[in-house]
Image (tube, rainbow, N blue to C red; front, side):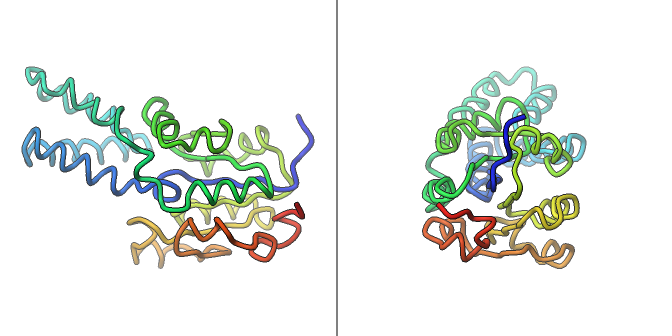
Length: 230
C-alpha cells in the first residue's frame, strides 16, 4: 500500500458533476417520439423495477428487458445508440471541470460513482470526467458500503465526499466519522426533494452548485488540515 495522502476528494457523478435529470428528460422525449408514450412509460416502469432489484440505475439492462416484450420491433436496435452516443459533455454542470481542477490543486481527486459496468463508465468517459481526474474513477454498487475498498485504493488521512444525495453522505459519515467532510450540492431532483431533506441529517457543508468549488478558498471551506497548504 502506498503512503496515505493528506486528503482525497471524492466526487459523485450523476447530479453532482453531470445533470443526469437532463439525460433522463432527453431519453424520455426520444422514447416518446420514436415509440409512443405508452412504450415510453413501460420502459420507465421496467427501469424502476430493475433499479429496485439491483440498487443502481441500469438503462441498458432495462432496454434488454423491454426488448423481451417487443421482440419483433427492430427499431429497438437503435435505441441503445441514443444512450451510448449521447453527448454527455454537453450536460456537465457549469463549472464542474473547473471545480475538479481546483480540487486537484489541493489533493488527489477521484470520481466515486454507483452504476453498471458498461453505461456508467461510458458516461464518465464521454463527458470528459475520466480525463479530468486522470482515470481516478471508482464505480460500485452501493458505494457507501465499499469504503474499505476505497481506502485501500486511495489511502488518505482525510476524505471529502461531494454528493447530491444526503442518504449517501449520512451513511459514509456514519462509517468514517470525523475522518470525512461531507459536501452537499443542492442540485437535481434528489437534492431538492423535501422528503429527502427531512429524512437525513444535514451535510457538513452545503453549496448551491458544484461550480462554487471552482474558485472557493478550500483551506477556509474545509480547514487547513483537510484542504492542504499547496
